[in-house]
Length: 447
Image (cartoon, rainbow, N blue to C red; front, side, top):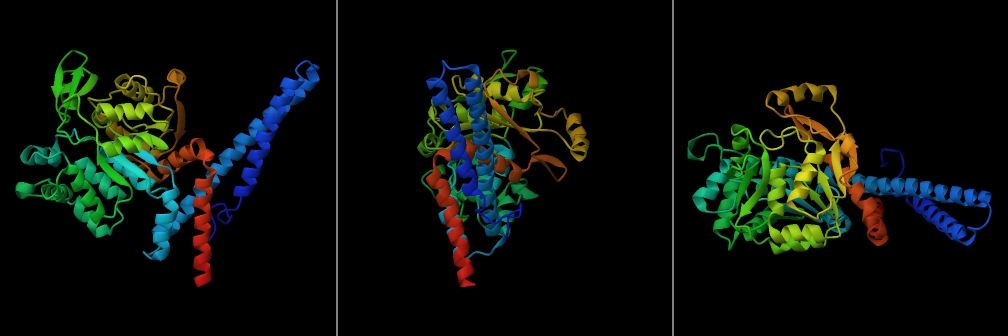
């Protein structure tokens, strides 16, 4: 079986590595010679500068091709894994190959986060989802009020997204009761509530549920404390409750100035802090900027861990604005809101949707009627935040709703992480490729 470009997996890796080495050699040679022969004629300098430029171009192109080839191999193996039935080889792939993938921590909440997780798990098992527990609406809010437990909704969605289980079990966990006292309540929420009742705390309940559903990676609440989210509007009003903030912002015709949590000294889950410090990349979003992403960063030790980690910090932009929360926000406005609440925290990359197709434009009109607009990159403001922007088409239509395409989003994230962080860890990459080749050879020998 060949990759989409017709090549067998692994072909091209050595060529691009050789070209990277050649490019680095040319750069080094040109710099050394420029220093040594600086007092010689202009023609000599021009010749050496030309070599330097050639080396830079060769290194950049080869690095791009090398990264794409590695990601294609991973995607190729992941496709074979997802298409096959459970057997020893599949377990070997998941437990020996994906475990070599990048260490990724995602921070946020909402459907956008869980959707992205379902794509990322095809590339790596080293995933930690740090999820907000500030939700106080819907079925989660009812359980929070009646049982005094932390809201399970966003955590349930992340567990389902990372689960390796039968489709029937996924349908069961997503099922919502349609009438009676349980109307609009999710079975998955009730399952977590029952598990919480027989566990020492909510974190243990999540871990037990994750074991039942064979979750890839970890799903962690940002804190185990009963936090409440507040918003200060620009007119000075204070709004209490995550579910009330957008509505009250619209009713009072005043945008959000900032958000904060009570208790302010809420302690983050230590496993989440450790995962952030050890990560190759920390991904913020996608999700509601004020009610899903920033509440996690209001937990002091989580915020300080994100600021201190050497991991790449990547923001995944929403596709559409949210009425009462991010009205008329550009991509940069979302980033500024995060930076305002986390002073001193840089963001390295922002993943941005490039545009809309004709079908997507038609659906966009329905969003406009509800006050939601397309989140755009302000090109006149691109250089002010010291953020690199990656624009590409990452939309898919699901049930006439605009959503992130989890496959495209996961691939661009993994490419970015591999290129900027793991490229210096050749051992991990070659283990990744070697093990996939070994798996193929063993299959061929048995056949």
